[in-house]
Each structure stands twice: as C-alpha cells, then as structure tokens.
Amino acid sequence: MEERRNRADIIEVFKIVNGLSILPVLTFFEFQADTRTREHSLKLIKKRKQKDLRLQFFSKRVVNRWNKLPASALEATMVNSFKARLQKVQTKEIGIFMDTASV
Image (tube, rainbow, N blue to C red; front, side, top):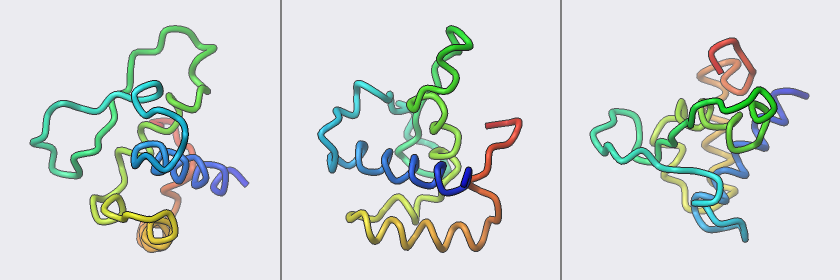
C-alpha cells in the first residue's frame, strides 16, 4: 500500500508540474535553477525542514522521489504515458517508490 500511495503522489506531481491539474505549480514547488544537472531539468528544491509537523506535507515528501526519476520518464506528455514509463522504471529499480531513511 505504501508503494501505491507513493506512486500516486509522483503521478500527482507530474500533473501539477505539467499544468494538468488546477493546482498552481509554484504554490507547491520550486525548481532548481541550475540546468547543468545530469539527471533531468525538472529537479525540485527541497526546502529546509521548518518543523517536524511539515515533514509529511505532500510538497515535502515527494521531492526526493521525484528527483530520483530518470529524464526518460519525465519526458512524457500525457498522464497515461507517464504511468507506463513509471512502470518501466519500477521494474528496473525495485523499491523506488518505497520510503527509506534517505527519503
């Protein structure tokens, strides 16, 4: 169940970042200004933890998982194609949607 919830979170981030949701992207996330990243250009900034209360906020808990995704998955233009690409990532990297100590 944890893996499904985390996968659903990533899909929601995709919708927000690509304007497929009514939620404004800049309300939730800031993009990394450095475009020299090796992974992908849609890296999100994880703000410092202000209080333990905010650790489980949606906009905080998804950043590390989103930033770990390969560029090939994020190049999708539609939600269904993104889901299919996520499935390929999941088969290659077992446990990518699981919470770990570093997430």
